[in-house]
Image 1 (cartoon, rainbow, N blue to C red):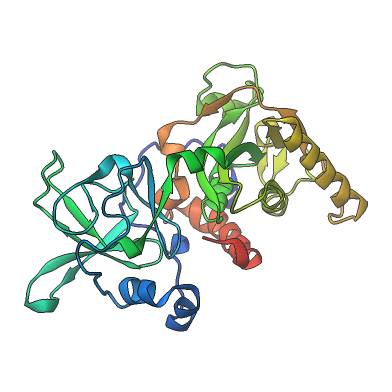
Image 2 (cartoon, helix red, strand yellow):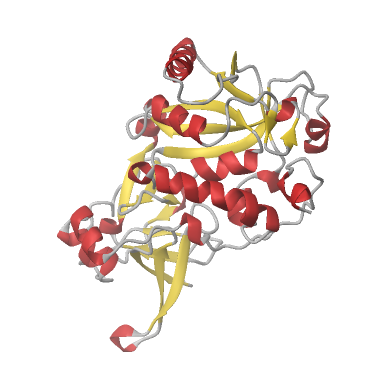
Length: 335
């Protein structure tokens, strides 16, 4: 029974739990004292004490630039500039969150009225309130304190982003780990390194396509370096077993780095040489280093798999322990 749970290649149902809530492993829990050290007094008042800034005073109220609005406490992406509109209420307003599950709600009976409070689903920080009087087709108005948000212009994001494609066994495991890493903007599960065009999951599992299960990691180079990305990679799977990770056996589970440029290739080669020279692992690293040719994004039900299916046996028995081990070893660079 255990073997069937630990083999990613086992056929799986495409029905997933489309819960809009964030799993406990993805949340950030800190004491009030820890938050006070990290936040400014104004941020602490708004985010942790559920305060409200005066209307028409917020620095983000009139911004119309393209970009993404993040939680100013934890960096969680909350709103796209495309969802922003002028509601004439005195606070930045949005008609939808950037994706399901980034915001959670609670009933607020303060001030002698019943309202719906909105909070960052990752850290629980108070953002503002949501109302059903929006003028767009969603009918929603997220009314948010500027102090709760950090705006990242689209130009800045493009100038400081990089991506690398990594294979280390089942992509569900690797995806879940990188989603929790500070500086990582996006993680997509997919297939690369083979000869079959537009491969399907079942085809890759058969081991005849030449493709490996991989994740493509997009990251902000101002917040995290490629060396840190690769350090996490080498410690999150066994890079010394050829075409195998645990009970997952086959070339589709090989340890591989698909680089996008020569600088990435050089860094990867130097890290492997250093690890081997220092005998960090009991056996030599067999990780393949190859240029990225084509990345095929996997089917939708593979994306965000652990977060959407955390109660499934495979997630609880296989992925969860790996995520927790990663969180313990990399506390300083977690989201």
